[in-house]
Picture 1 (cartoon, rainbow, N blue to C red):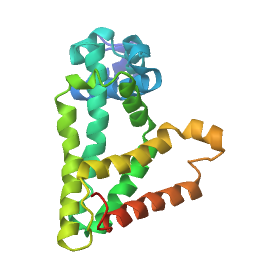
Picture 2: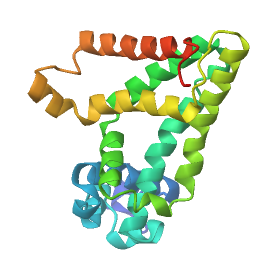
Picture 3: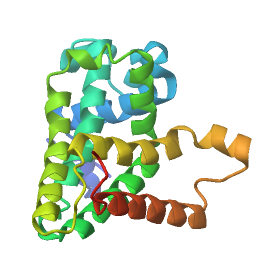
Length: 231
């Protein structure tokens, strides 16, 4: 078919040329993608073993761009720590525990902590890795300390309501209570492989999970209802 002057091949065939997809500028989306991949990288290989080049390759960005967003490898690692702590505290704040009676609120917080830590092994691994480093990176964060105050404040309010209602009698400090709950839930994930190897106990089995969740909740509530506890 002969084309008239000024016509394009697409005009002649009756088709419309496809527009090239435009590249959207989404700096926050790029930053979150980098953080997500960096979380996996550092949780698997630690701070020393994690590679910014590997993170760049998996996010289809560049090492230079990562440094533009975060400043350097240590700053990226610290941003990952701030994110994982921020994520768990943000969900805790949405549990609306203040709307529940004190005992139900404690049980709900334990249920959440138990499930969240089991489902987020990266969080457990990152905390363990930072403890190996004696929290040397975390010390440089102003945000993490403030983030974790919220769970202590939440527990303090629940304990106060429980004592006012005559339900809780123990003089337990909220930070000690947080330690007790976290220790049990954390250990089940951090030590699951060695525990299974030594004792042939699959901590991820449904019946074991159910038993352990009930056990820690019952133990904490029983302690809070005991007048002599905490003295």
